[in-house]
Image (cartoon, rainbow, N blue to C red):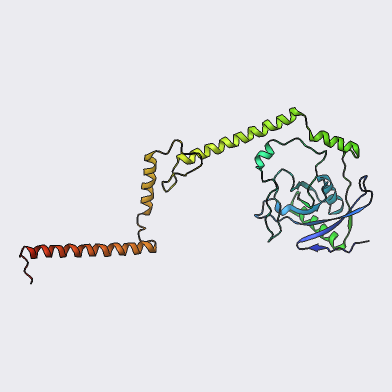
Length: 296
């Protein structure tokens, strides 16, 4: 019997899922997915053949998403499924007009990907309300899958979600296994630390070289960038002078470009006239003093 939930919200089509019973939850549960065409800003070359899926279950796997589309939502071929909580980069969409969210942890992606820490869980879990991008083989497949999604949302069809296949232990054995994973082998942990520190030191050395280069090279205006750590090997005076000469050449013919330059130019002309008048008056006074002045 179709449920009475809405078929859409905003740009998203709502698809109802039925989660089968499991050992930890013996009753059938309902879950809702929100799906729409992927629309990242700015667009990517692959976005026309992608769908954006929101509110995936915490233990969803790529194989479950593939089975959902292949069996119930058109049966079109999927190229890749990328969750937003995964470490690999993905072009995810954000609702138009929404606020941007800061990344959790705020770490360096390059450093995080260079040396992964030992896992502390038997399987990958996603945050509640996580999202994923489903990439199809072509644009026609993505359009056909979106039509099937809209049809399922309009008819409010309840689609069974494939059960999660994993070998995770339950009960006391699960907590024993989690305890073991939280205290990895010291050799494995040391290898991860060494790999992370090697990548970190390499990145720091590259930043130091870039900062030293910035301290040595003047900018286009002839100034030296002031950076943290003092000045080592300052730029040569010839380089600074060459930059200043180049700046003067660019400014030639631009003396009356700005309004304040016109004002300064008029002030200089007035001062020059006043200086000439004072000079003439001084000469007249000198000639009168010598009694050689005969007015005409």
